[in-house]
Image (cartoon, rainbow, N blue to C red):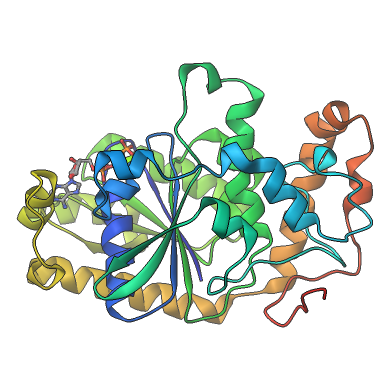
Length: 326
Ligand SMILES: Nc1ncnc2c1ncn2[C@@H]1O[C@H](COP(=O)(O)OP(=O)(O)OP(=O)(O)O)[C@@H](O)[C@H]1O
Ligand SMILES: [Mg+2]
């Protein structure tokens, strides 16, 4: 299952991603946690020290390796240089599984033990001033998109992505890559403004989107969110002393998370799991091709100097049963 946490800056995307990852770990589900945010905080939220988190190798820094591995023996992709973030897999491509070892995870992944279960952490890498607004900013997040587009995940295994709701994910199609998107919103006008923008993009592509209220303190907060987002409101979490203690460097066992917040995580887990019923690999493949053709035309062809539409394998459908090339 591919699950995204998006929302306004500071709403709690990283916090809720990390709590959700812990919830999955307690259920012994294989999990890859992906930090795809500009501000790289997921590692620390999952219990790494700042130094350990800074030491996690970045996907963005290893794009040639990632592209070469995923390209495999796909004859439609002549070289890693012509592979852009939206280049879809086809016959001969190598696909990724959540629960396996491969050169991409070897080069970029860090394994953490949470609640007695191994969780893999991947990170796009930190962004410097110089990255913002230039091509390499896009390519850094593009590494995550390539991984999503080559991932053949089953129902009981998860890739959880802590993401910005920025325009980049709309242009590239990244926002369509998830079985479920949890939009984290504080009960404020700015919090729900991000929801409205997201919903507008999502509606055109049939993207499953639910709102998770965060830092909700009283019934009026809940009523506000309910008024603003209606039935899209899934569940709310309140202020958490457990989260605050972790922020103070005094982490508590997960079992001591407040009862109400624990129940909310159960709802997220049940909702994520149930979203499998709507999974449609043909649509998933069709949408990745759609965004690839759009990106090829708007900037990719000019950059690569070739017609990137030729990378599309018309007969290929990504699916759990898609065979790996030997
Ligand atoms: N339910 C909560 N209870 C207590 N503190 C919380 C809660 N949710 C988030 N916080 C705190 O709010 C701050 C922002 O949360 P977080 O970093 O998760 O937000 P974010 O959306 O990932 O932010 P950014 O956009 O900067 O990445 C953090 O200090 C976090 O510990
Ligand atoms: Mg964050």
